[in-house]
Image 1: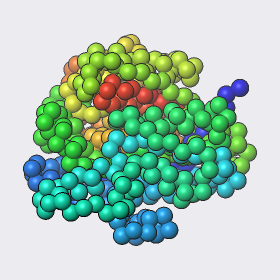
Image 2: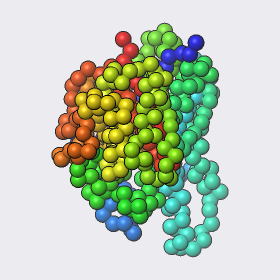
Image 3: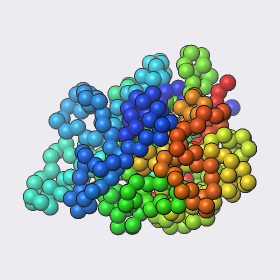
Length: 404
């Protein structure tokens, strides 16, 4: 018998906040954090916009884990989110031997690799420090979360493009549901990098101002950064120890567009398959979904394809199901995006309210959805579908449900 999986802890580090209450309040007010960059620059592309994270002073890497003077940003954000999630769950130390980590990332520590390349191009071959390979290896992002919290269960890292966060949750779900682990810390992390900005600029997919998902004037994506980790546990064990349960992670659906390496299928057929599979595997009818957390990047093709996928799965009800994109407020955090959105979904169930799509002033008639413009909306929220897609056609949708 497959076990049910509970969400018992959430940790988030984003431009909207680094504590759950501040993060949720900012989202519900529709506050936009996409601004001119202050801590990151790319001389070849001046006037860049993005949603940067400001960690509280002293929220640094533990010296015992990272004794070198380097404070690699992706690792720093990952450990900060993990620390918050584990504390929020009050994770039972007795679970440590059967608790593990699954982390998703798109580029991980690529930013420091780019910095080194620029230095070498500017100043010549400077040599590489002996510690560089270890510090630039993305696998340590997951390994050091396990080390920091003494977790002896499975430790894995995936790179499923911008669906990496949901893919990590799906992987962790299977491990717990099958009995291979009793608890997992799962989610995603990514930071702003030159390659992201340069690549999207070359493709013409970078917004000239700020992203406006589902708006007629949308012109591209705005980037953000951050990390989010969720503590997942066997629901029966969580109840036995008296843990607070935000929601049940009921399952997931996955697919691939098999269409193009970067462009989404304009008809949203791959996305629709993942959504339908998620509903089927969780025994959830489309009529029972209360809220959809959209991938919602603000690019013309993504939002149109996602709207078509919604219509394919929900039929006429697609126009009445609240669907919103928090990327309109915190930017697209790549491998961390759907993990941050999963935290928002868990909080939506806890608070019985849904966040808005900011900047939606002129809805595109081809994206005829209830995209919750303006501010958040109080409403009953029992079942949530959270959608994610990425380059290569990766689609992973997860279902979260209220536990009575």
